[in-house]
Amino acid sequence: MMPINFMVIKILSLTSLAFIVAILLTPALTHFLYKYRLGKNIRNSGSTPIFSKLHEKKSGTPTMGGVLIWFTALILALVFFWISQLWPHSYLAAFNFLTRPETYLPLGALVASALVGLLDDWFNVTRQGGGKGGGLNVKHRLVIYTLIALFGAWWFYFKLDWDVVRVPFVGLFSMGWWFIPFFVFVIVSTAFSVNEADGLDGLAGGIVLAAFATYGTIAFMQGSYNLAAFCGVISGGLLAFLWFNINPARFFMGDTGAMSLGVSLGIVAMLTGYPLLLPIIGFLLLIESLSVIIQLLSKKIRKKKVFLSAPIHHHFEAKGWSEPKIVMRFWIISGVTAVIGLILAIIDLGLW
Image 1 (cartoon, one colour):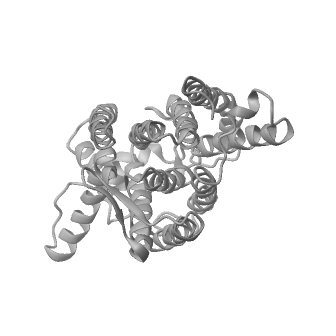
Image 2 (cartoon, one colour):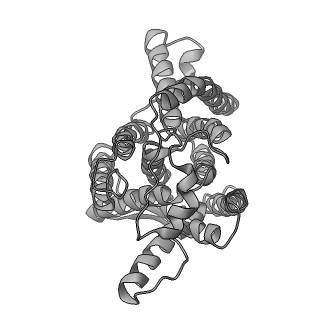
Image 3 (cartoon, rainbow, N blue to C red):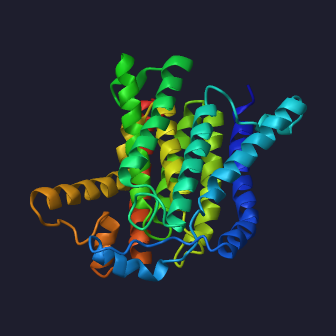
């Protein structure tokens, strides 16, 4: 076991390296997206008149920018893994963070869901699929989320022999086979929530960055240093992505980013044993999803809307708030709730 000081250096170095690599990859990605005109189609239907009017100027902005995040994580994971195999006693080999107990599943799920999201983005660009304006519809997405989550649940339950959840201030709770549906619910709801939050320049990226940084800190406190390094790499990639995604965005995250980040965030929460803190750490993800559910139920039952537009960030946009104002305030809220979640984890772990 390496000394803890080295682990701090390892995690911070990988985070910084991810930022640098992603920044360096951006010109090539931008050139590719603009050259082949892989722009997002903004749905323009009678069912979403407010949304369509607010975002019609963004139609054609390149999507698939989330490739920058997961591809950077994949590159660094494979490079340092290969170094550890070829030169196991070298200094750089110690920077390998790809291990079966901690990072095989979150990285594998990140890449797998990213590729599915990439296909969804392609459908949107080419106006294919069952969604309005192109792309997969909600039902198809939920099916895909569920299939990925079922594989993750199988890995936890049978490969890692894991069926426990930490209940803050109570202790570990063994769920038996109920762990499988609970796992699926966490992954699907998180993936859905991140996708709903990806509606304004920089919004989803900032919210998810706070969540990954917090869970990375929790993993570090638990001694899961490779999982913490994975969260650091994702955070570094997100910082680089946000550099180009803040208003006015050079490119959008796309489903290849939102889907993969949502799935992997849910898995990271499960690996730390703190999925029950996710509604606090990712508070605005919960609010975004609830606003959509409330809006749909109200329109179906009461035949009227609760919000001017949903998710809730579009409601504030429709009320006249500028896009940067909404994003900045949502970032502040995300930072505060993430810190609250971290404090609860520290108290629960007895580290205060």
